[in-house]
Length: 75
Image (cartoon, rainbow, N blue to C red; front, side, top):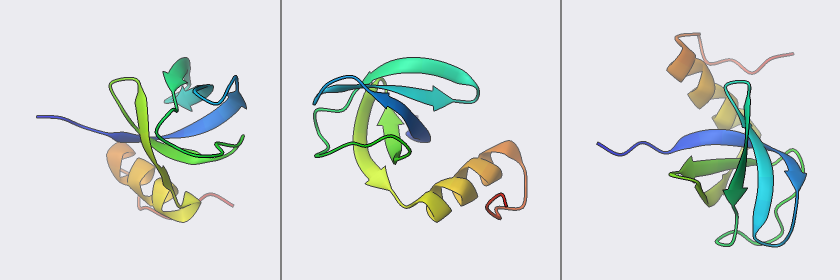
């Protein structure tokens, strides 16, 4: 089974790379498939490649569900 997860962009390194945060862990990922990645964007990540941009509210809901919380965004 394949799983793609929401991640938040911490730093844009180039047009094709960025630092992201996933569960408190920072990783360098490939962002070549997405135009104009910016700090604070939420992306869907699969095996080191960002596939698409995700609405922040939807990202918070998905992350909450994955963590067993109620899905509401933090204040």
